[in-house]
Image 1 (cartoon, helix red, strand yellow):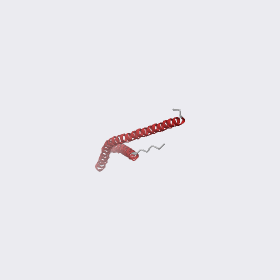
Image 2 (tube, one colour; image 1 turned 180 degrees about the vertical axis):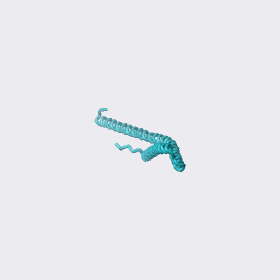
Image 3 (cartoon, one colour; image 1 turned 60 degrees about the vertical axis):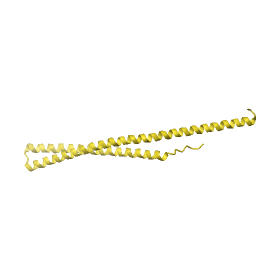
Image 4 (tube, helix red, strand yellow; image 1 turned 45 degrees about the vertical axis):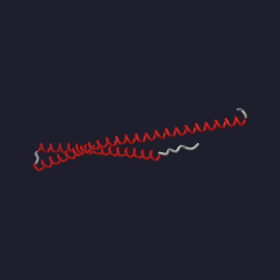
Length: 149
């Protein structure tokens, strides 16, 4: 019996490749989101620490240059944190698009896998029917030859 050969195997492999690539792209974006969230957390910690130092110096008395540098530094940290928050929002939007693309790629691959499975089952079913037919014909010919019919 001949082995089944799926004529669209290269297309199936290509769709599997596209699905894997979409998975990697989604994972990359998730990694970038985690990095961005870590940066936001560090900015918040840094801001809180500098703010405590600033409040301590305010209670003891502070020169105007020092006051200006503290407020400018705190403003820069707030600005960096806001930039990271906006970047994280863009990454979440991009992640949603990539997940939809991944879903589409998975469906396309699954369609090909199901088609291959149906083709395989159909092929082996036909082969079994052909083998059964040949066997039946051989039995009939044997019986005819032996004079039993």
